[in-house]
Length: 480
Ligand code: FRU
Image 1 (spheres, rainbow, N blue to C red):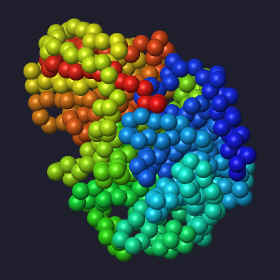
Image 2: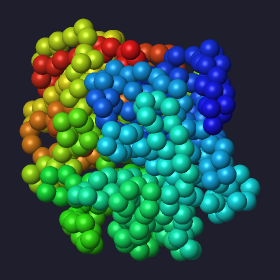
Image 3: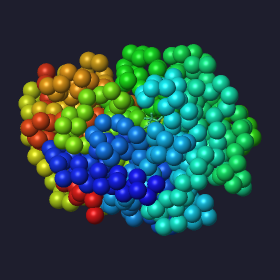
Image 4: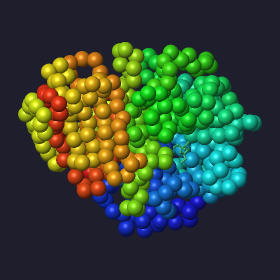
């Protein structure tokens, strides 16, 4: 593997030399060059946060998956590390697919899917997927130990293990496809190497609940248990399930040795265009955190022409609201990135536009819903996007604009209860992340301002709108 890793690191360096940065993120994890998708192996061990990711170091398109790697001491500033896993052994010949990391008594241990095409490369109907283990003494260099869990008879897809410890036992949830339907399968082990099947935690009953459930994750949150997963093949319903694939959760109750008692049906976790394959982890102080891939399968990615593609979302904190819903907020650690602050006075606009600032990358803004009667009011971000209250539909809308039709259009969430709408907006070179009313809703979308302009203006159309005094910040780069 050493040779394959050295070659892969070399390939990234060569691509990096040609990278163009018009869309390259300033404060999001992204590959130095080449392609990335899912976050993998998120863990805090020996005082260091590790973020691995699905990576193709040779090209800006998806290909034989490696595990890229970055580390952080504070969850805000990061360093690139050498590529951690390269495919090439008989059990992972065609890819080291998604998986997780655990702290096994101080030993950083990865569990990932070894992927092999049995037919033609790319023929999803003929694959062999096994769960594999790798360990690292220094947190940087890994030794592969091969498969620890083989696919059961009759299972068509079997991937993306997520492992945690409960009591004196390890538990693993794995995404699967059986008889053409997606499911999450549960296993347990005393040593991470020998696994026993426990039960199917949950699965699609009909095709429009998903033909495959990718990247399952299963964890307690407050009084509830969350099954987070990325189902493929959900039918769109009104404003919901609009993306190529979805990511969301079931809520319920669970004890080791029992069935998962679901109390709330599938709910998308983020309502933007670009949020997939989220994976959770625990912060050093026990908070439940999460990263997702900030893209969507089959979406156009203009940065490919610049030698790279794919980024992760900001790290986020999950909590359970008193009404039982999952709240998602930016990690509090991110305030460490705040630089120059900009303050904006309260203003009422009537069929007007007012420029705030060209440099703001984080904006905390409150709109008064009661004293505003404009048909549409909110903010524009250069010519690339706008975020507004649609007073007729009674929704908060994120609309993006592009020369590329596949990158246009709206995503929206219902306006939350209450007189005020508070927004925390993060604007990077090619992304917009919006957190609504302390996390009751989120919208994450890639935007590609070809002119590089991302200046923020307030606007009100067809009436007046009241904006409270607001704050903005320029943010530091996350790279040390
Ligand atoms: C999700 C996914 C996973 C798989 C990986 C391959 O986006 O399809 O199921 O392990 O990506 O890169």
